[in-house]
Length: 372
Image (cartoon, rainbow, N blue to C red; front, side, top):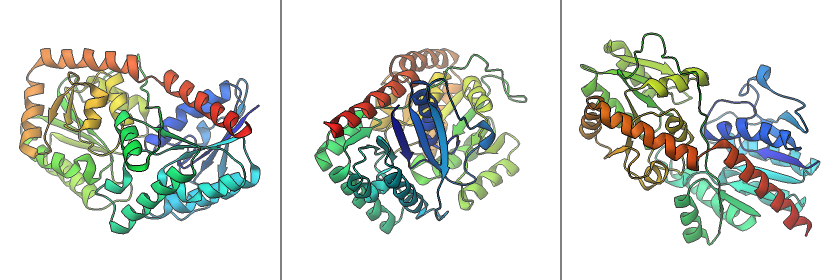
């Protein structure tokens, strides 16, 4: 029975971000396919009552390792402790998430543990990081290019960047979406009457720009904001202020209730997706599975996922965003066309079954290559 160590997420099960969404689907899939999945976790970041042990054929084991809970060094510190433990236990293969953990790949290589690395987005171009953090991510990417056995990119555009910048080919494995049959409206929010924003509050997700647009829209539109910085601060304060000063604005903070989140997407009149850096965004794919009519920031990544006809694309300008969302709210025929388009695209290209089976195949291949 093969054993995989999963390093770099907050753990299993966790509801923090994209990597955690992936692991909530991938770990049970691998276990049911006969794998023993060891997921390295952070204390307090997982929902222990939802954790699984034995599955039909394999198992999921969550192992807590120490680290420093800090925005700047948490990934590095938890990654190091996880890698050291995995190197000692010597699993058949390691799935490593985030190029910041590329610094620790030589440790796994010395222990003859093959590595599959999901490189995520282009972290060193994210506005939320300072100069030092950007340099760390860039050097981590170089270590990843040098020492990873297999690289996974979650979009074709990210794969092209790694080919051009680092001379490495990668496996394309995006994110999937969950189609939910139970999408009853959230109490107090009538279907089709509100604009929805779901994102972590960081500059590259157009958070401040969207908040400026909310100030324009709030007099005539109901707006629901889901998300937070995760650490508090100015953007959380601004979301709270918008909600307090406008009866039409509701800030729900970070939601770990998938049922409620899916219902919000399924019944929104318009969803704004402002992500500008990264590849395939898991929140966008899930919004597509829910049929959310979308106004998206015009980027190569969003066009790749949505397709040219899957959304209204707009510049990162508050007036333009407000105008596009207003127009979509006023056009039920366009909303219906966009809903059908994104549901079809998600079901064809972004399913969890396809993503998880792809990871299983890549992990097996990495084991065979090392043994060969």
